[in-house]
Length: 123
Image (cartoon, rainbow, N blue to C red; front, side):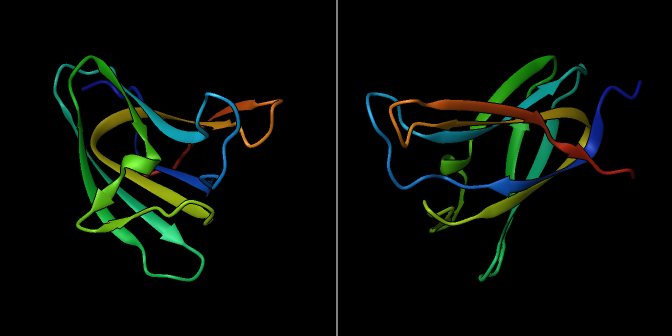
């Protein structure tokens, strides 16, 4: 398999605002593209400043597809990311993928959209 992407990614700055204004809801997304024929099996771990991580939330991205995963939808059992709490993400995949991170902040009328590539960890 050619190496298009990486198998280990980190996003150190996450934060889901408590409030939104207007019609749009503030949110954050992990944007994943799988450039390979086979499905990518991904484990996502969420880290916090003052509580234990939520480990290994499993997600599949089908071959030759993209998937946008809202971080507010990530949960394991009854555990999920609370709004208003800083967090970080670790994404591990069984095949190379490409990961981008996006944030829509609508806490004020002058909303902001930010997007950046996640940090690929050398394996």
